[in-house]
Amino acid sequence: MRTNSTNRPLALLGATILALAILVATALAADPTDTGFGTKGIAEIEARVPGTGQVGGIVDLERAQGGKLLAAVFPVARGGHYFAAARINADGSLDESFGERGFTPYIDVSHRKGGASGGVLQAEAVAGQEDGGAVLAGYYYNAGALAPAIARFGSDGRPDPTFGDGGKVVPRPANEGRALLPGETGGVKLHDVAIESRGGDIVGVGEVVPGRHGGEPRSPKKSAALVVAYRPDGTVDRRFGHHGRFEVQATRNFAFTGFTQVEALPSGKLLVSGYVRQQIVLYRLTAEGLPDRSFGGGDGKVTVGRPTSETGDGFIRAPFAVDRKGRILLCGGTFPSSAPSEEPVALVRLLPDGRRDRSFAGGSTYIERAPADRNEPFHRRHVQFFSFQPEAVAVDGSGRIVVTGSELGTYARGPGEGGFEYLYFSSRRFLADGRRDKGFGDGGVYATNPPGSRSFARGAVTQPGGKVVAGGWIQLERDGGNGPGNTAMMLTRYR
Image 1 (cartoon, rainbow, N blue to C red):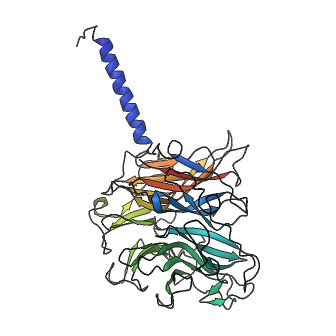
Image 2 (cartoon, rainbow, N blue to C red; image 1 turned 90 degrees about the horizontal axis):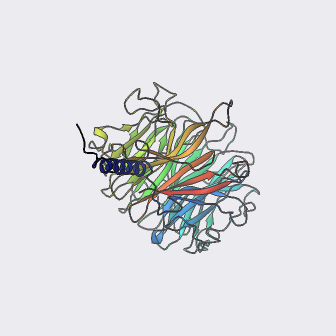
Image 3 (cartoon, rainbow, N blue to C red; image 1 turned 135 degrees about the horizontal axis):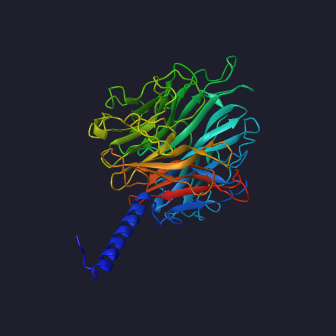
């Protein structure tokens, strides 16, 4: 068709504007970060921890009062262990009014009364209190012996003297309260913590680690998933479960068995997730620490995948989130016996009573395939040779589901050098019905990886306005290197 030459510039201008609009829309769809957070959507907090000189990353992220965030600090520095929490402002900056320039004070357990000298503490999780304080959980480690560790801080970030011994409860490494003998190994690690909505008990979840040698008389003999309850003063609440504990033992050691997340429900009940023999499990417990028989199949639990007899020392998480309707989004890696080299990740939605929500993901468990480079074609629908390890799940104000974790990739340092594996901070987003959100990053997958050879994602939380913030850490490229001394906490917020 012939066009009028006087209209051609206008037509070209219109086409150019349309093309630019499409490019801008595509760019916005590909990059889901909220530019009003941090610097262009990313906040890097590089801070020397008072008293140690170490740099920490974020290992857990939770909501605090006033839209702020609480972070459990992970020891990234070489040879360092650090047991502390940090408070972060809603915009991603460090709240320096909390504790000592934003961090809770250093806790030294090297010479505890009644305990052996030496040893270190490692933080794993944090929970916010209604009064603005914080509870930190993790474990004590000394020459292979382990013990659970809990500390409580006031709203100012200082240790709460009404809790335990000067704000902390760090028993000697023990099995069922009996101290291990010198040279023995094993004990208890805590991986998450929550505060009961009724009564204020502090509930920690984790794992019982068996001793390494069969001749250790008091070391734990079997792997187990563990829930333990503490009263507000730091003593074990013996009314909970069986003398203060709920425990699920593995029939065989060294196939990972442990609880990795706990959430206190408004009803007073508890949701607890993890693995037993590498099978994903989700329990609902009563306030008394017993399986809630009205949940799941009548035994108080839901399982995903199959148990395996594989052995290994790796630690894996089974994160979950509860949406506004009380539905539970449960995620975790599976270990199919038919293809042991594959570790597909499953995402399933459960109704509040534990029944499978058949309206989610077409009525089935969502198991995806999305390699790190996203170039490999689908061999089977929704199955991946998995390089992604989910660490946290959050639901935003629109009902979209964000699964955050670390993804394995390849990295070549220079021409002629072979590639090697590295991890980077990655998230996936799904629509409320379980379909992948194609407007999020690259087909629903978005990697937050500023310059640096490694970045890690460990937590995600929904802010009061409905936006999801994910946190972890990054090793910075600086002065010709990217070692442990060049590490920063990292957060990002999604639109």
